[in-house]
Length: 299
Image (cartoon, rainbow, N blue to C red; front, side, top):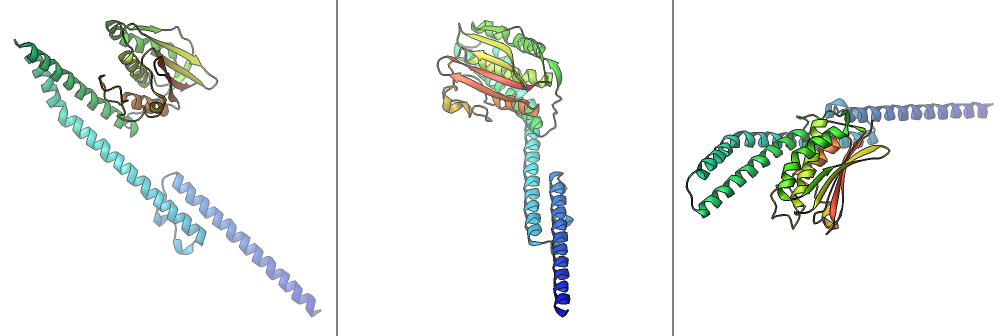
């Protein structure tokens, strides 16, 4: 009889231990879930959870999430500092650059030697380049930090394609490049203003690097989930080793330094595409030309 009692007590004790262990496990999982939820929403702090009441696993998770939250805050602080710095540079240089452009114009109106005229043109070109660089840097910084928002909505692709092509048609004709916008139909989800700017960046590069007598074509191609605005040129093409680098900030290929530019247009195009849930890619064969495709989500 005593043996049965002992066995019963042992079984009851075992059940109690199992229940307690199960309860502790459930509580631990719930606390871990709350930690992760707080981290996802950006509200996790060291004060939120008392480490003295946590298990070893929870304690390690809390330390990891705390370190991650601190790292994220530092990254955001650095972005804010860069944004502020660029805005300050833009504000402080706006008037000097404008004055430089004005004085260069006045200088060009004076009787100059051929060498002086050439110098005046070079100064004017560099002043324009500096102003463009500052404007693009400010725009890119504000886009990256969410100050300038992208508002995608179902829109006609043909309208943005025609507006962008019309802007570069005079430049293409002046250079002797044939620019053609093929008839297009269909819609995609995008911000018309920002997408036009991204497409203009692609057209600017295509016209710039296509030699006289070459062609640049703008077209639309539809896929299951995306529609693509495609810019195809008959320029020099891009070596395979550089194709993954050209969308980086300030990157310029080894053979591109003879052309005007600051190496940020493709980077901005990629940022605009990603902000809209799309992406940009390039297909190129050296000596034959390139096709840049701006992919936009279909409605």
